[in-house]
Length: 314
Ligand SMILES: [Zn+2]
Image (cartoon, rainbow, N blue to C red; front, side, top):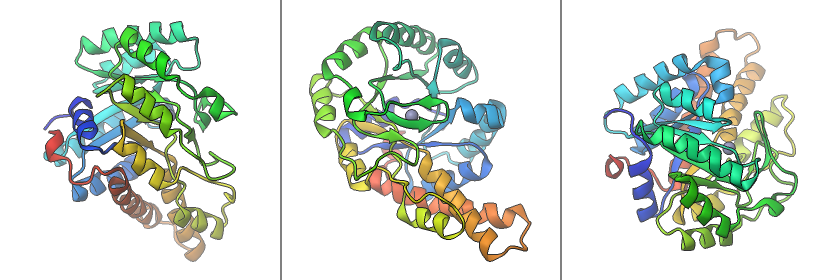
């Protein structure tokens, strides 16, 4: 099985009430941890690369690592996706680099301009059999250089606009603002997702796949380890996993996870450094970090409901 687009995955996820995990990759250990989790759980997979990841590791290195994952997992459908493309040029470059899915995020621009840029990317991508995710509405928090809004509730996706946007832009999936937020400091108190917004959009766009960004849960296990071993993240808070499971049963077909990967890796590295201060072999701290990512991702695949669904998405 070569790399695939997200088309079949989303069709099955929508129909059968689950979501596919989209995990951000920045290096070999993160990618391996995710890959071994989906191999064991037989789940479809979206590996995504941000512009920050490209600047850190370069597309050619990341693509080469992902190519190994694809070659070693003939039974797992894998899509490779650009996360938060900021312009037509960026999206074009990733299409040309062999990505099977790209996101164009012009959500901070006026509605008509968002449609125009998205449509431009759609035309270029579709001609090369690449699918396009767009975004409407604005999330809170910070993800690399994507700075969100302060008042999340004021910027939720408007269901009427979503219909017009999808029709005019031709995008294949849509990231919606439904109360989630980027980063590890999403909320001051337990968040309430706007399930009514998701429901209204899906009523108006039946069968159309929606995407949830900013959906890490900031797992207590890792937050506690980080704080115990010299870290300083006392106020970190994420989206409860029950809320993610509920959204996954609705029209949400792709759920983005990045912060939880970072925290799993960081927690384990901190633990090794604290418990074995004489250790200086990178394999001895990156290895446990990779293992923690694997266990965390396995758990997430069950939260999303996509464990065991690889075969039906082929
Ligand atoms: Zn995002």
